[in-house]
Length: 437
Ligand SMILES: [Mn+2]
Image (cartoon, rainbow, N blue to C red; front, side, top):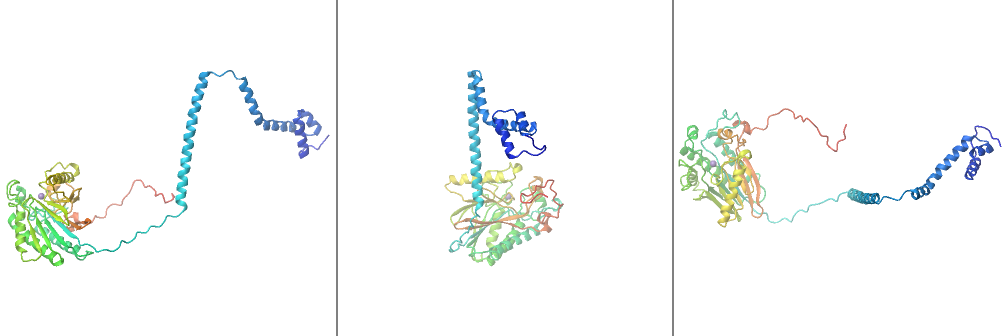
């Protein structure tokens, strides 16, 4: 049988070769009979063997197993352990894959429907309650002089600046309590004169540098306070309570004394002058405790005001500033009053010239701002500011403000930050939502 060289095998010829190869005939003979190249017949045979190799394999391994020598029991035990460990690994991996799948399904579930829109219902309108304003005005240091040169242009203080700052303070309070007030008008205004109203001559350097001696300072300070309170009285429809405390700068004794602290303080004298000046004003009442503390309720909340120099804690500021000292003092006051059976809701104090809110209450700022003394201690320079609070019958403290009283002409501390060098971050991290260029 001859066939043209170079022509492809027909389907029948191919099947014939395969059939005869399956019967075990030699490829060379088949090629000769069909008339094709020997290499083609051999190639088909190789392909058939390769195809059957898969099915032959199990038979081969059984054969090999049968021929293998008896297993070493130690080796068997080792392999069994290995098998167990691998089974364990497998289970763990399956578990993790399943969990990942669950998580993914959960996430897809989250994103498959858009988020439900939420609407907050407007509460039913009830009767709004009137609030009480509590002002802690302290550390005026009337008469003290702070040199702008010695303060590197940061801050300055003098009688004129004190008068201007106090004027801005009372004007701001009047505006906040009228023009910028919402809801029922304030029910009451409690003005706490928190001590250190005058600079005093308690240190030799103050005696040398003060612009006014203690007594003229008392008189001048009282007149300006009286005008401030009269302004509030004119602007607000509510009664005003003035609570007066004694600080450390107003003492008339050489050293701080525990006995007759209040009676011997110029701060008390300021308050007495004030009371005299305002005696014809209706709805202005004065309260001067004989103690260094003033305990008073506002809607049943118990508030304690004290100057801050007699809190059983001083010094040890470290890098933390006066916060630690003030916090320790407040804890001691809480313990003191709890032993007297009085639970305190809020403590207000001055003395530290650093505005802050702590766990138990507030520490007030001051009127002079940073001085040569605070600079020498490297205390962080804080602008002159005073504390404003409003108290709600049910919600307690509802607003906290720091009334800033300085202006740029009094020091760089009161100016907005100057235009600075452009910010140049060394590394810029691209936002996730912005594709990289
Ligand atoms: Mn003080």
